[in-house]
Image 1: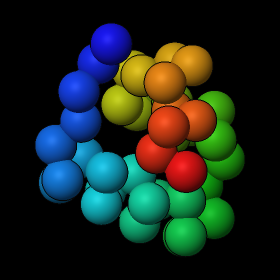
Image 2: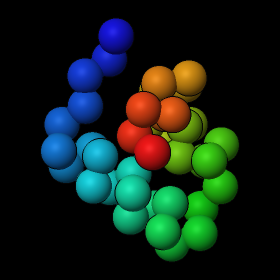
Image 3: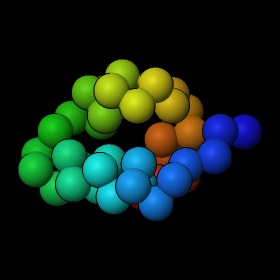
Image 4: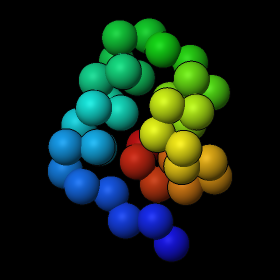
Length: 39
């Protein structure tokens, strides 16, 4: 399983809160199904 750094999680949450779509976040971080674990 992919491990995430604190910075990666923070960036993903920031994008999420700014109204980005889940798909864009997944593509940006290339984390696919594991994106669910961030939220």
